[in-house]
Image (cartoon, rainbow, N blue to C red; front, side):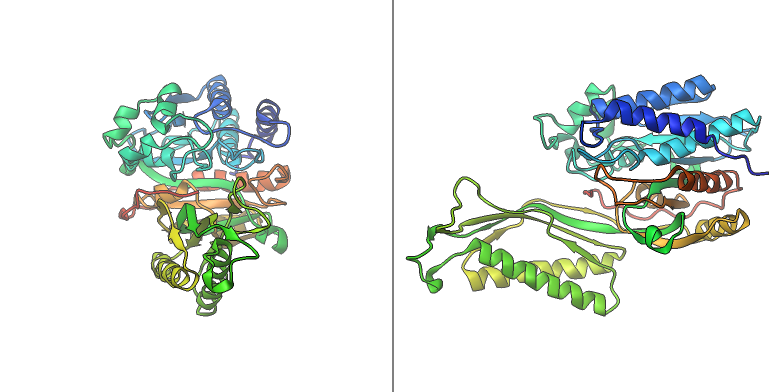
Length: 433
């Protein structure tokens, strides 16, 4: 018998988060900052009021547990993150944590006791807008957070990730040692509910999607082209070292390669999210001597990422030679593609059909903490919720009716007998966004 999730509680939690973490334009819940702390405190106090067990680990991830009949069995786990990008929306991340709490609240009200422990985890710092490293909260869980990541500074303050974790009550020394905070063998499955961050479900008029894979990436967040400033009228073309012309040629070439990769069937996304001249030195009457930019490349295939990065580096050399400029790509960050568990996807599609839910299988173009769990050999999947207007902006517009459908499916998947654990896969200890 399906127990309907506690949507009334979900509404209250969403409203409380929006009220307390509004920045006047959107929502800001900074990683290891005041906004994220409020959200974690809200979920923890709500869980304790429901009579659920709560604990935190050295990274200050929050675990909420409904005890099972046999506590020696590997647990079923669900959850997501509670932080947001600056001036983001209220549902990105939070929907997954609140969905899990809604299921457990309903089970308690119905007197339902699961066979095994059922855990909702609120994961820290998924949004790398704050600290330039991927998934620090979930990587820390499995001892995969590089010690050097703790020295990375927050983008807007002179504070390191390690200092922020310690200020939040965590133990960065334990994280630096690579201590595993959760044995993957103690987790039977991990399922994350998350709003879709693109337009696919809106376009197909479906309330939910079941994710079959999460793209990996490589990034050059702080790249620069150095040319030479010179007079715009007095410097002939042959004598110019024009950084803007170099940037334009580079972007055009990489977009042409992207098109060729797609024509050959490759999954790929290329974005130059930032592009600027030096505001203090650039002028309409100067040949520009500097351009700052960023590159974000994503794919579900590690081989495609490797091949396209070779193209990027080759074109850097070509454009440098042709424009007499010099590229400095800066630090490289990356994340590993993560396929979802095929058996779990099949099971969830069957459950969706049994519940009368119109669902589709689809990839995730954005990164999520589920990738970390999947790469530890834990059978993992995601449920996307239809969401208008994308994400990472104040206009996120998930409808509660769609959230209820996704949470109903989550409850059914949490209540099932999980498959055997899969083998672990290697994980790249660098970064994401």
